[in-house]
Length: 421
Image 1 (spheres, rainbow, N blue to C red):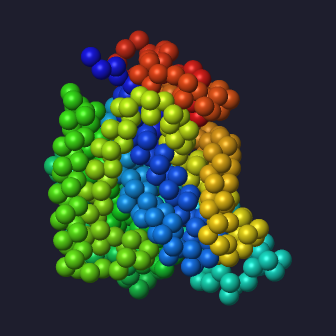
Image 2: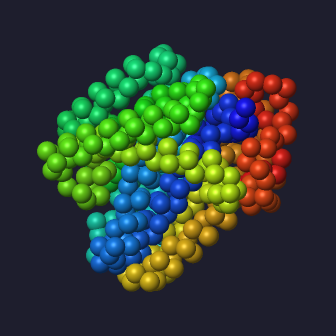
């Protein structure tokens, strides 16, 4: 009989899952890794570096297997977790939205203001960005928060299943007409901008990106209930290959652009093809995690997954302030590759501090959580403090070895001892 992995608290939703699904952990850790690489490339690297084979490979890796996987697995963590109250999930989602705008201040507004004041940068150099543009940007952080509120509301009314998939399909079809919709009045446009993307600095609008966590929630529930997960991952890969072919056919008919702006807007052909890629990618991650000699060497990647929100927050602060040191899109290919490694290493360690900054205020709201999750939330700061002292401990232990738990049985949370970052 296969040993079950331990329960864990998801870094995005704040939910304590029934158990750890290592394929999800691996995919999520790699997603934030790819995002770090591409953001360093696009903000520090000269434009000609983007068109090199290495630049193209990084940009592609940071496409389907980065942000879409990130939000898909946010939904999957909800589907794989025990039921939780709407208030707890909604509060977590709104907290993530708030952190998104806090991130705008520290990665964009303050560095740009300081740079313009000191003459290190000019408005012409960083165009179309301005301090106000950077302050009001709607990026992945805010989109994830709003999406979490939406799927939490839906989860309180409708059990994940075919109904969720039908809603996701409807959003994907309607998104072409809704994305960028403006009503001509600030009373409507201002609150709806993060959802419809009517402003040019809305990169990840809720519509259509909410499709991925909707589908992910259904998939997460299927995985956690499956008697044979390997078989289910393989079947998902077959479904994914079919979706990929359908998506490629739709792309051939639609002929959309392959620039980053089209990627942000997510035409339906992209949604279908990327969903297919996600399912195949997760099956590949599951295959890798079942090779123990490989899995034991992936402790650092699992650490990235365990604090993925803090990793995302931290790397953007480094990239934003780094413009003042290396220039905006000035580095050649060699220097920018070295910069990528440096930012990954710096983010890995500095994100331990960001975990505390981001999570402690949320943990004080533990009264909103379901009773079965309060122990995990209240124990969070002590867990993080202990685990941050042993960042490589996962790589030194058998991944199937059970951890110590205070829970007597069932899906209740545990306090983990020296488990990893």
